[in-house]
Amino acid sequence: MKIGQILSTRPDLLPYEYIKELEKLQDNVQQIPFEEINDIFIQEFGSPLNRYFSYFDKKPVASASIAQVHRAKLLDGKDVIVKFQRPNIEENMKLDIEILKRILKFTNTKFNDALINPKEALSEIEEATKKN
Image: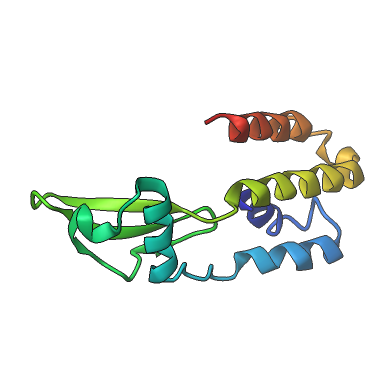
């Protein structure tokens, strides 16, 4: 999604119809509801948030395309930030990469003077997303 957001600002590289679609990625990302955050935490750790935190801010500090961040306080009083990966992010990233591969097929000649090879860069991103 990040690459799509960047490409949406490059009309010199992509046709107008692609830019218009990619601009939709620039919109504010919807927050993951707190109930879903708690469910994710239970799935991952086997217990609700209040078992690990004396305070957990239900309102996120930030909500982005890949993750959401919340302020919290551990039971020992230490202030922490808790980052939650969005549900289905792995599948969404795979789909984004496949879409970008298709876009690159149509724009290959426009990258002749680029500092980096876009296909190689996308391949590196794809490999990095496969690592745990």
